[in-house]
Length: 193
Image (tube, one colour):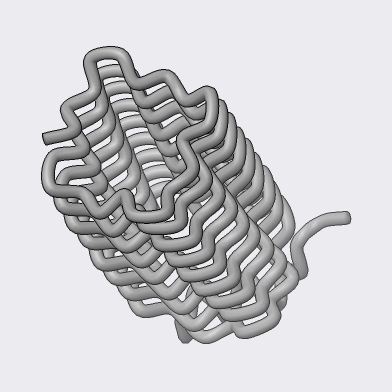
């Protein structure tokens, strides 16, 4: 299955392509800021270093997509499927990832400052070195996630499941950990005060 050339043309000309068939499309470094792509099929799309600021990707399918270094500041990714996506080094501050699906996603060194990850599924995700200060993760699943050296200062981590997560050297200063599950989590060197 491949992308629909008509949908790609429509996107590049108008930045409006809801429910677009864009499987595997190469839009690396493209300027798609404020584009409307809700419910689109962007599986395995190449979007590295693209400008996706304030883009509407609500309920989009981005499984296996390459978004490393992309600018997703203020993007709407509510209920988007980003399983196994590469978001390493991506800029996601103020992004809406409420109820997003991110198992096994690569978020290494990503900037998730003040991001909304309420109820998100980040099972097995790599968030090592990620910046998550003042982010909202209440009720998120971070089972077996790697958060080595991550900055979670002042984050809302209430009811988060950190079972078997690696929080080695993580900064949790001022974070709300009420009702969080830390069963078998690695906390050596973590700053909890």
